[in-house]
Image (cartoon, rainbow, N blue to C red; front, side, top):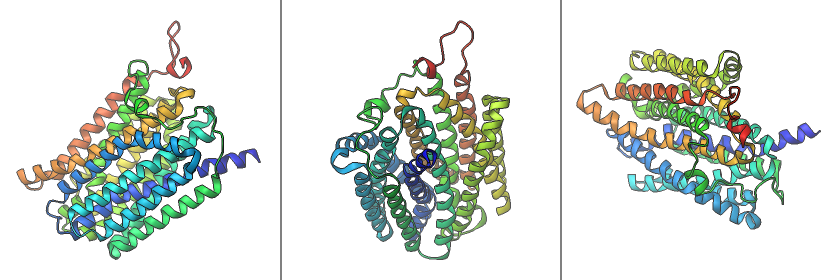
Length: 421
């Protein structure tokens, strides 16, 4: 019975991550390109999409610590679910405004509102871990969150891609809104509100928590998060502009390319999720460094397949290879990073890792202007340059992981950070 109760709690504090992943990944890679096409901005689509997502996600990164602080201050009166409810209302309003946007400025304002509202939802949702779980169970919650995010991304890509290709943007946005609402109701039913949290009174990472980090004192963990962010930078860069690549390479318009991109990105996310448990076991036996290096090399092979693709089947092969390599790299990296997290600061350290992912998602938007500039400089080379930039990011990710590989101390050396703290 105790195990069932804990599983119910973990599901409750994780299910809204599924809806947020469906919202944000589907919005960035599928919905926004289609809206830009509808507004007549398809010719400069990569640059417009890249700058729009860069600015919107960066705003969410800046607001995130403030959102956490506000979440803590309002918890006594609103509760975490009350804050998520207010954020949900703002997201739904933003989705309506985005679907009805008559021009680029209105589209950007709606997108910015969604990103900021999602930041407040993330802050309240993430604080459930510190509120409701003891220190030694925070890694379990982090793994549940990662699983929900991958499932949400997969569903978002597959469902939204099909809807956008078959109908107008309205049904796709309605599915996103319905998913968010159902996930919120599930959160309320599964969790409820607890009057006293485990651990710290303020469980959300603050501005100082996230932006004043002791790099030297936690060098291994920091390098692993840097390496993970670099890998995600490459992956997000490829996914963000896949619609435009399919259109440019195979002569599809943006709406037609949405269905293909949704299928490809959904397959990529599913392969990443399926390979992760096997990769974790492989890493324990053969070494985390070897697994990360192998994963990066496989992902590079996927980039080569994309760059040379002359048929959609080649693009599928490239996407699956990137998903396979990403599952191996990210699984080994995450397992090793979790071993270095001090139990009493788990919420802060997981917040830092999440911040690294957000920064990767933001800066991946700059791949768009790069593609447009190089595409105009030498016709047809724009997306090859994106794949080259992603290749560099994957290679740097493998190199950046090396300082974090040694977890167990040698005889006579001080204990690893996870033990020392």
